[in-house]
Length: 227
Length: 220
Image (cartoon, rainbow over all chains, first blue to last red; front, side, top):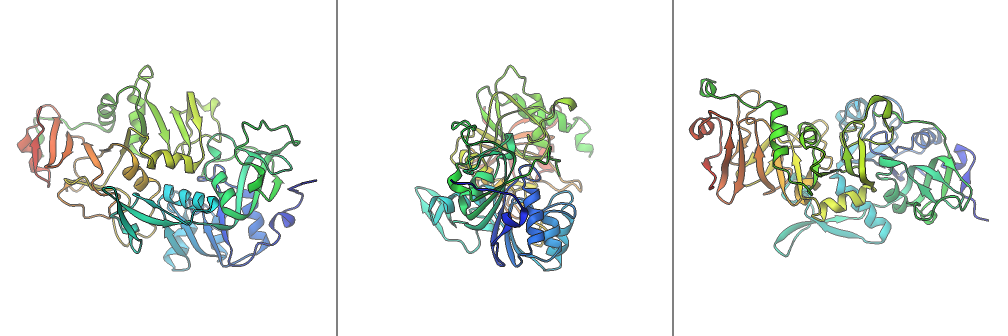
């Protein structure tokens, strides 16, 4: 019997190694797997590369991971926000490498990784400083940049409902990066508000089929706060 | 500012309303965070314009009443919003695929500078930015079928934001089709800025004095 439900954080985080590329779901705090990020802090892996739309706020969660010096590099579209104090401190101090990626390019690079596509061309960022060092090609009469796939060793994601096969649904805009990250990583760990029996989820509403998910942890934390 | 003794620049609200006037029913529109988000408030609900938010919301409605907030439903500016009847959700990659794929009729962004060749600079004011943040601006600017910009005509210190060439880091090249400022509405043509509309009492000569790039009247 397949059972991807784990019952402890230690079990959820088992095997995450130093130097891993970790994809973190969420857009700001919505759809962000806060409990799993806490679990990663506890677990101890270091020298990480984090892929996340934002770079954390306040002093907890991702910001705490940065403050502890566990992150070597962050790949991000929008690191600066109200409360991104820790990121700004470590970045100014030269303690972290930052790769700024346009948001759509970032998500498509992960989609490509999950879909077995090594690279793709996009018009986004042509003629800007983010094009530096990238192959450019004219196709038709338009200029494009070659962008490489962005796979993860680990994805930490948040879902609304999950079953023991790892099938997932999401709640309104909390879907965001979670499905694409689930498909782009070797080891995908989901926290879910609700665990339901196999067969309860409407197959038409499963947004992430269990094939992309390795572990599910039940984290009924209630309502998120926007940060 | 004696040049403007005879005219009154538009307020932020009036600028948003001015843009809203030009958006026809049936368009799919993304509004950039900041001032452009206000445009939605000026499109009457009976005119069905469908707003997209790049975090995966199509058919975004106005802010909810305090007791009707869905804590999982935010826009790209991380404010609570609602979903209109007929609206839908999608994940980030689909959301940007519809942007990149040219499915949006219009995107309206704020900007620091727009150049007469349609270049836009709106994400960073220095190469030494302490924490540069681009978000989805480059994807939207390159992907939407039409890009309009909503911004003040001049900076607070009186420099023109309509320039011959952008001096700030670029967001996209040759992308902007129209600019709405507190003084005028200008199209970007093969021959540079063409003035479509000005606030009452303003002359082309007076507008030119506060604009770096050369201006001409649009053909009617």
